[in-house]
Length: 210
Image 1 (spheres, rainbow, N blue to C red):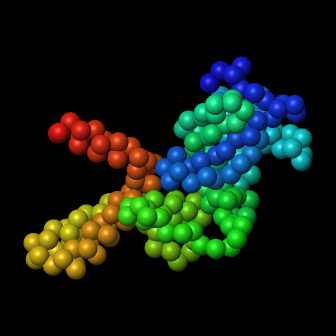
Image 2: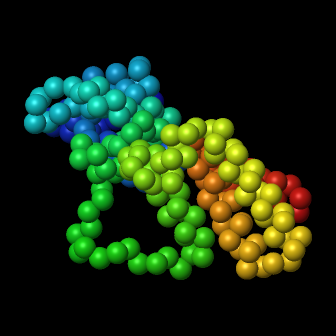
Image 3: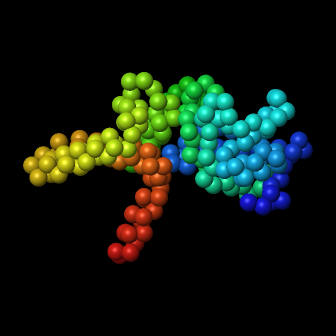
């Protein structure tokens, strides 16, 4: 990134939108000045400028909830940044996965006409569980047990899918495929592999076979 291209405002600041590179959930909005932007690029973790305290701050320096930078972009006007990160915990000081958890009208999000929208929703929920680790949640249990436990569950669910298909039990097959997809999404999160990367490979393979 060429810093000369960034248009800082009259106070020497530029807004930085932080997004989870895997779930695509917007985590927070903060501000950077030239120094914090340089430190972010040099260290590979997010640094911001606090307008209230008038000083630089390293995200996660005290909480441990750091954000490893995967990519940084600026918009067409060069006056806003998009920072794609792998978060090591909640982004919000309240302990929430994202700072943007409150709706203005208080209503639930309308169901998307996209029949695969549930995959996006599930990916966001898994990312939230990974960041917040709520006690008693099954997804928390999987993340805390680690990759071996997750792989064991993936193997078990794959075997159940095979059995249901061999038995031609469609009702059972629906449940087993759903469980397998869920555990695969957990595995992708644990491996820090975005679902988009998998879908890109799927697209490439599909196109190659046409």
